[in-house]
Length: 417
Image (tube, rainbow, N blue to C red):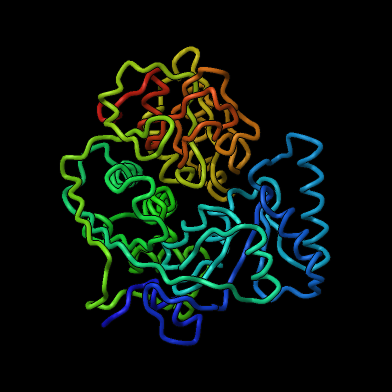
């Protein structure tokens, strides 16, 4: 019997043949923490008496950047001191979101095994990486030993087909899939996305879909590694010789195979307070919004900004709507400036934040008031996610967020495109 991508990567890192359901200790290629999780990682490393880290490691200051409080500033200082003591890289304030800057740095390569102290580490599966989020203590153990234990996940194969309708983007597709599978329908599974729609999808779209694999409970998600992958990695300084694609065998065993036809898909919106509660944007027409947020590790990339700018150009956000934009990395911000996308956002009444997580995690920069409605390109909408459990968060594509900002209520973007 052949192997899935997850089985192949974990087998290669365990030094023995594994199949779904097996347990194994595997060598870890790369690890990282961010400013919401690194303080505990550092404490555990100190408690363990570790003098030398056994895996490649970095830290990213992105969740609260710049610092909004004295307490957070202490955490940032602690991270800097640790990075200096152990000669480790730190992506400082303004560099961007961990799930963008790490792939941009060339640390996420096909076939790698990456652990991050952040639940959306599954994003790097878009590059063929077995990447998954773990707790800070588990991350510290990997740093101390160079390894960690894994249960090899069963795999769902999701085939996406059909002609992509006007106004439909990767975010709409993944929201539709999550709505069908359920928020816990793929718990501890690996997801292999494939099919003609995926083959034509750009890397920004693939990163968006893998980013949200965890929102249906998945351990990790994978995209095919092809010319799109190779071109993206090359553009970020990775030599072709360093890229070793991993694909499933033709006779690999899957727990489930799903076919998703998007030919009739409409712009999707995830309703409060669960990501799998999905409806077409058109059915929510007239639902007034108070805030529109464009950014995050899901949709703060250049293609996302381009889509939103195309809609916002020459238009303004509706009165009373806070339009907030957070590019996902400094390089993306610089490119957006070069393309004059930032001009369009500012002229539309938008507020530009430093590259980073921004309001998504609810620590600062756009916390909604009681009863306010937010439409966001983020990946989660449970109560309190943006800092206020009495607010209501709707998730959508950059196009839907931009169109809704103009209208002042949730709007299908099709008429703007």
